[in-house]
Amino acid sequence: MFMKSGNGFLKGCLYFWGGLILLGLLAEYAVPLAICSLIGIGAYVLYRRRSNNRSVEDQIELLKARIRQADKDIQQLEETLSEKGPAVYKSRANQVLLELSEIHQDANQFKSYIGDSVYSRIDKKVRSVRATINVQLERLERDSQINIENMEPEEVAPELAQILANIARDHQEIINKIEASDFGNKEELAAIHNLKMEKFQTVLEGYLKIKANPKNYNRSGERLEQARVAIEQFDLELDQVLRELNETDMRDFDISLRILGKDRKE
Image (cartoon, rainbow, N blue to C red):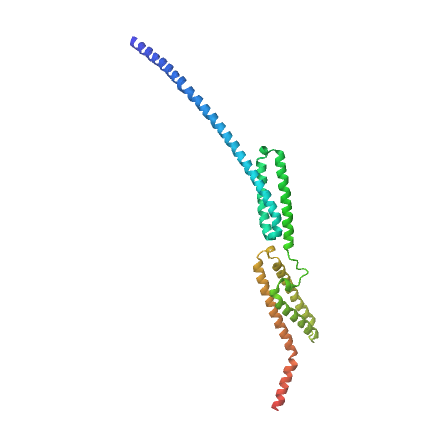
């Protein structure tokens, strides 16, 4: 009994002194470690904050540089149209518009850093320049459209000049022959011929529109080729119609030949 009580007392003493030693160790090492950790975290937060501030400052400096470059590009753009023509102007104008859009986005992103007054000046300048460029681009686009209303078809499509001349000549001859004929259905024949001419005119007008401004239409090359083939085929059809009408004028000729042939045999 006495031995058991003694053992319990010794264990209690060991736990007591062990706890004191552990507390001492914690006080000696854990607290400094905690303090060091707090200092490290604080330093990291401070570093990140300064790093972010440096990043923002760098971005703002980059924005300023882009604005200066955009000013130079805008000045050069005004000279491009007269010196290098509409095509080069359109290409560079689109580049400047993209540049202005990116500047406007960056200015909006850093609005709280650059201030409302600076942002307002950038916003106003970007909107004004973009509007001016867009107006110029629209004017150039209108000027590039060929107005075919006051032009002869041969001016727009010189490659069809000979075919159109043939069709015009055949058309007039066909009308004249129908009117001078003794056909009982010549009004019907004239109506059929005029209907075909109207369809031809529709195809020709479409060809001229696409030829004058091909970029305004889908599959312009393919459709031009289809229309050209149709016009050439129509020219051949008119030639055949004219030959058939001419054959009617040759009936008396054929009869006379047969009569003369019989007379020679007799």
